[in-house]
Amino acid sequence: MVYRVNLEGLKPDEDERSLRYLAKDRKNEILRDTYFLIDPDSSPSQTLKMGLTIVYPTGRTTGHEHEDLEEVYFVLSGRGKMVVGDEAFPIQEGDAFHVPPGAFHVTYNTGIQPLKLLWVTGKVRDTR
Figure 1 (cartoon, helix red, strand yellow):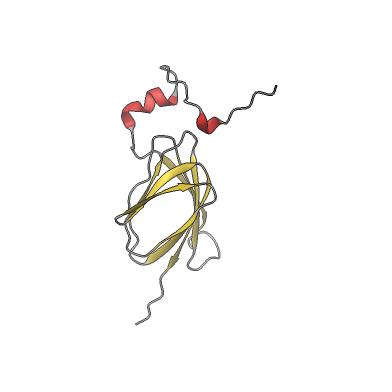
Figure 2 (cartoon, helix red, strand yellow):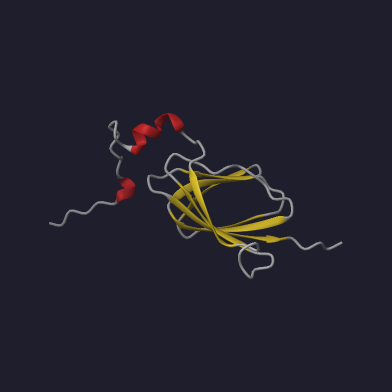
């Protein structure tokens, strides 16, 4: 008989050498890396910015808002929770969502693997 297991269902080792043990007192602290892939300052793009953010287990992003930018996200891998304004919702690989201009937003990693998010921001046109 074949033995099969999925990593998402396992509890990680928590001895004193593990990331979980070392980060246990840092629950939901800012623990992320962001890579700017396309940026008007360093590419031909005039208004769009694209990046990859990796949120590590137990971590979160810096909560922030963009008054003149809208943002779209695509979850490449991992699981988490997204808070946009007063709304919180689970996110996982394959999800895409929109954050309107001026909305406070923050991402939490609720899984055991890094949460990888591809995002794009664009300036909102003035329609006045």
